[in-house]
Image (cartoon, rainbow, N blue to C red; front, top):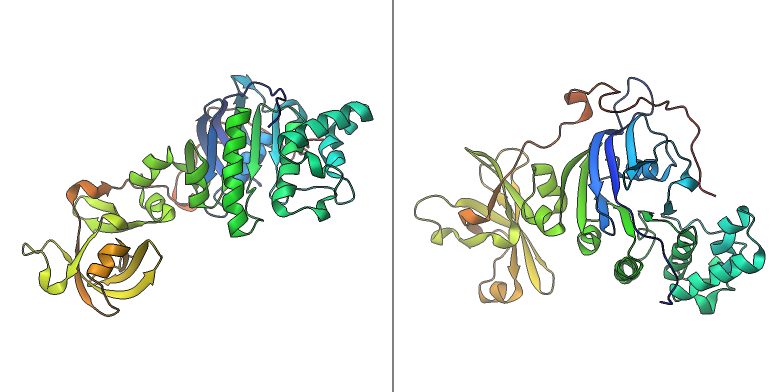
Length: 373
């Protein structure tokens, strides 16, 4: 990338942030607190409807806030219009104007601010060079690939000189191969630019590949915050363990536990634990995945929702001792590989709601949305 100046990154803090679309309805985002370190890559992760995109839009100023506060480097920006916050948004659809060239798309916000054509085109083309798109500056979006359009969208966001870049599902419109390539580019851009990135995704793989910090959301609240390694290896709740994937959940006298499926021990039923601590199961599926083989199994006598488990074996281990559909086996694990799970978050109708103004100023949901030029 060319040496184009970028502003200093900013820490983001949200305090008791709440969004309720109508009085008396469950909150889409419910009293969440979060601090995102300056210059870090943070992924908001969760299923559809968990509140992650609503949270991002409130940070951007594209969604009104019911109550709570948003701060950038301890400066309260909650009431500021989007254009004055020091943030910029990259949208899922890229939102490029189809009739404008790459240069004019990138320069559009400067045009709206009255910057002269020569100056705005110079700044736009400098940024296109920075994202390896200088040679295609005159092309329109329809003449560009999905990855090239994403680079133009990034340059357009950067021209506003944001301290925080907000990305709403930026890779979901791309095919799987390009998605892997572009997530590597996003990580490289974040490192080279040094900006704070806040990235919304429903993809566990994407979040683990990109994030310094993962924020797992469910039912409008935060279930867990941590590094990808910490969240994957130490899930805080059954929801996190199941949503992240690669875990089995078992009931024990001490409460539910999670065990990674690649840490499971499997043996033929005749080779089971003599002490009786192993669980009886039947192989229901054998899925070859190249380096690994994924076994699906049904536990005998398990409670509803606990019957289906999996075991991930290395290819060499499976070839040395194959397992077949319908085979009776015994499952066990090392105590050190079991993670005790917390209670997790209740759905909105099952949990007590804090007062709408608890710890924050009450806001009018009917306020007009602030939009970035």
